[in-house]
Image (cartoon, rainbow, N blue to C red; front, side):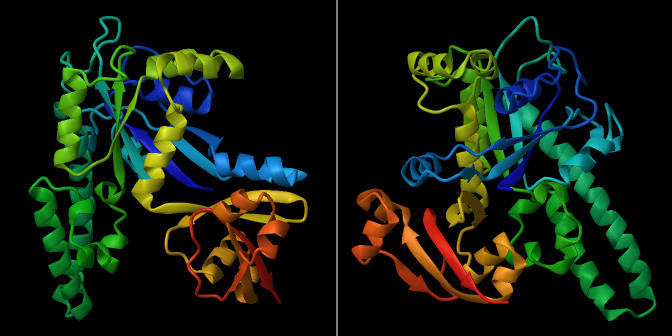
Length: 364
């Protein structure tokens, strides 16, 4: 799987509409709060032009793209960390995803009520962030209570843990998300074991009206400014337009996007932003008649990438035969690229590059 992305935000900001457009599942997307009760989950193939180009040249019997999972999580409201709205059960759902996309409403629509009666993107972002921080503080307090009891009976590790947790608590109480902690604290065992909600990588999805795709409205500009001040990447999507596009057949979808000046669909934009956020890359394998894409973190060594496919390949790793996608594209086939000296043999410590076509040799 590529990664799982939880879609969060206040009620009626367009989360389920965007989820429907991305996954074409068709979950309810009504104009009233808490339409989404249980989290909806959709798995979609990651759009990949390189994979399609490889398939056109290689003609494999089977093509397997990497997959992304979207989780549509019910709307949070002010006081959610204390049980308001649908409460902490939905905060718990966020803990299970790799990254979080916060959908922010940047459009006016008299037919879609806002939970606070005022369209205020920056304020909405503050509400969601605060509720996640408050939930994290509860987690920290519980861990501190436990460590305090152990420290009182002379547990030295518990005392050290308490010092770390005090720093984390102070950081959160100042209104800062855990992802802004220094690297040493973020990598500490005490913090990692808490699975803090605000430690998750976050990007902001600006849900705009159909007239604001090519130019920021005042609402979108306010949200973007807020996101940039917190060093968060933004992605502009019109949930309404994407929902309309998904009702068309494939050919008509492309024509409609071109007419609107959209170079790529929302799914592609969101996935590309997510890959940048998480530092992910894609490599390819051809085993038997199957061409397959795999997602791994950047800077992954060849032996670990082999283990992504199968643990036996990591355990019995011998070497990796690597062809860069640009060389395959230049020569049009693996055979011609090999004849030109572009295919090279690498050891277990070779760092796999985005777009590498790899054949692993192993023995177990």
